[in-house]
Image 1 (cartoon, rainbow, N blue to C red):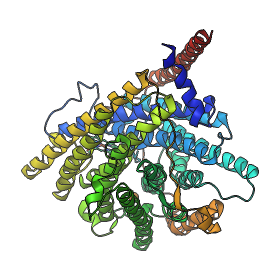
Image 2: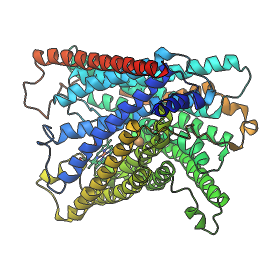
Image 3: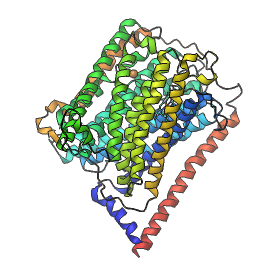
Image 4: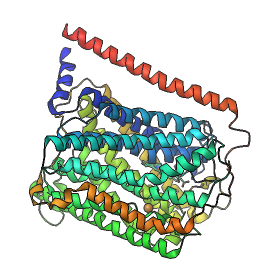
Length: 601
Ligand code: HEM
Ligand SMILES: [Cu+2]
């Protein structure tokens, strides 16, 4: 039936202004993230059921708990989030400016570097030479391919950012004197924040970890590296979150049939994140020695300052959602909730993600408080907290966004709407049970990053917490399976999508009411740099010279790994992985071109 292919091709041309050569790079960047989500999520299941003494690590081919936990953290917190951000905010930049990205080579390059990074790091982790968790604290020492992979992954985000900035410049030339379109503005602000934030980990990896791991440098300063890590490690949470805020602020209102509240307020929120996200990292080091209390206190203040744009967000979104519910005929104090379009899986997943995020934000304030932090530090309270934030507010929103994004990018209709609906609810219920287990366990002194099932000091009072963690984790995994059934069904279906567009809301208070200074990204970036210098400068000055005394440790593996033949294997593996992918891709493209030609002929 020829009707199946032709509308698909037409669907691309209708709404999109991205050329095919940019679209495939965006699409594959997204798919790479989905692969990370699938594999990472499956390992989450292993971690959850380990707590009720079901140990499937051997069966999964993993050497142990920490190899699994490294995969889980890296695939979900780094690979999944970065590739989604690269894909989604490239697309929103295109849509915002109404023109293609300035450079096709950069958007394709971002995909290839991300893929190369994932290949390198996966090799290191899967061969059990890098069970150092996603925070890769020294003096635990991983194989160099692990750090190289991290560098590549960060590079892919920089290429994406460079492309946005080039596109901004091109657009400005075409539209002298005009206000930057809001959607493009927030997409670029997100990446500018991250450019600054990622410097810490880039310096850490390139100047210290990589040369040390290659044997060019004998010893390392673990405390200094931790500080560089957390320079990036706090703002990274906003790099996870802000792409989702782009959807919550600018897209969900449209999906609800309402309007975005205010152009100016939205810009202000993203500017506040740009300015305040980075000078906060020391709140992860409240318990670290060697850092003066007054410096930690400054970061405490900036941390509480970032709560401000988060609160603006909470109130703005609530007002948008409520007025949409009322516009749809809802009445009474809570009657409007029923009138929201809960039957749309993209909307319901994101509304549920927002609700769960309320608890994520509240628990975050507990972590951020200097004194109360001592109660929860390094306990399972922390994973309880961040599965409500990145693990749900972000992950569940990405799934919700996918329910329109994948049809948009492929031209295929969404498969299994009811499954998709069930998926969102199941995940939200699952994570609430899971987090209840982890949070209560943490308050009961249960450590994080520990195979609790195997621990000899397990307390009987943790029993209920462990069961809740396991049951919640199983529900989340089933929900994940549903998501991938919907996703694969959508990729395979022949039914063309009927309504393919990027949902972008109109604004109630538009750009004409916005102060011009709220459009000046360069100015705010400068302020952000200044605050970082003030917040970290004195610390680094007081800290230097470096205390490079520690050799590398491999605490997860019997000594003897990392021989020369392993490096040869690593090289071969890499070449095969990348070469195989290119070959497969070329083949696929020529097959598609072939079938188009024969259809037309
Ligand atoms: C099926 C769903 C999931 C389950 C059952 C699950 C389970 C777990 C458990 C039990 C831990 C704690 C391990 C420990 O402290 O020893 C953990 C850690 C973690 N999870 Fe998940 N998780 C899931 C999904 C996610 C998602 C979607 C994300 C992020 C997008 C995520 C990010 C993380 C991170 C960053 C850690 C910390 C790793 C570390 O401490 O190094 N998880 N997960
Ligand atoms: Cu933080």
